Image 1 (cartoon, rainbow, N blue to C red):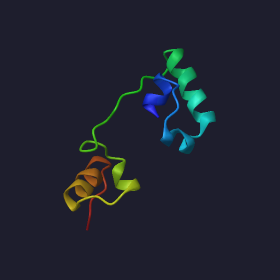
Image 2: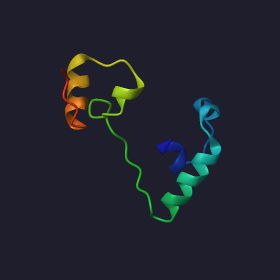
Image 3: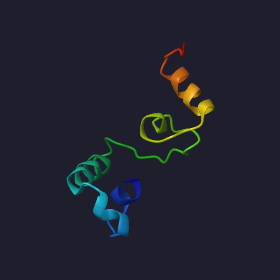
Image 4: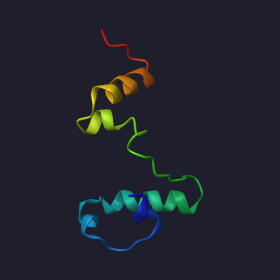
Length: 70
């Protein structure tokens, strides 16, 4: 999404992107209301909700959102 917002070229994966959201994000970026940055997967805490991750990363993600495992 970040690459598409900065450069509107077509890629194979583009067909899976909701173009309406892309236009909205691009507009916000153009107005300088939004800054897009890439986050390395080792530091991406949202992975906890989207894919299978190692226990250590899961615990770090829980710690970050202040949820204590039992």
